[in-house]
Length: 302
Image 1 (cartoon, rainbow, N blue to C red):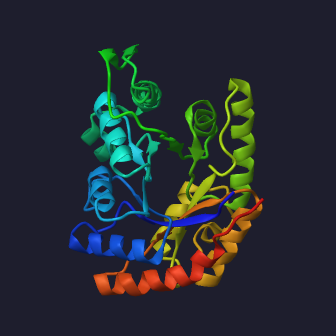
Image 2 (image 1 turned 180 degrees about the vertical axis):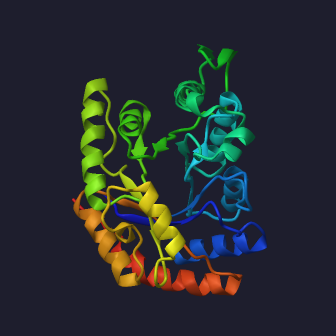
């Protein structure tokens, strides 16, 4: 198995113009494994599919992922076509991670989705999209979606679907439908316990997830963790005595946390700056420091 490390841009990123392409070029030059883009309609973050396409066109090695792309509210056949096209044009470097969407009434209204319907819509969509990626005619008669004899191309050589979440229902969905797990705001203990649940569900359904398809998104701070973030984490993870453990605040702490995750079987990492640089030059300096800190942790493990 290979330990690989990429970087993510959060839902509040303002890196949405020419500076985005400067950052993409630098990530390619520094040999980061991947760049992951989040989706948030209500704000300045770029559309993850459009931004991924822009990045694919100027790189040869950097992988592009979504963390996450919201499915409910999209047309599943159109989404399957878009993702298959990106996978083909990138030479297999596109890594889709899907989610149900933020628990935010404004976002949900923008997608035209009722919160209580999201999970059922998600499951139907994923079935349709996987069927479309086979290259065979797809017919589906569900509660939310109906498809009649549609054949979608290009046919991806391989397209693994990553899912997030740590709730019991989310872990069971990964075991039923996912090819990889990419949770966020979790501890190494969470990762270990969640994997145990997923592997139990995999056994129930006679499925497998590859050993190196267990990852984690780690937010990090350059200095003290902002109080607003700590308050949000306390609400998000009320079971943790010290939510600051989720956000390392020094390079040393970030490396130590990555090693802890590796010790419980996690091999794919997305590190996410909680405070982003303001200019392209500051980004280049920051990425240089980040690369010299975390990329030496990449290695083969048994």
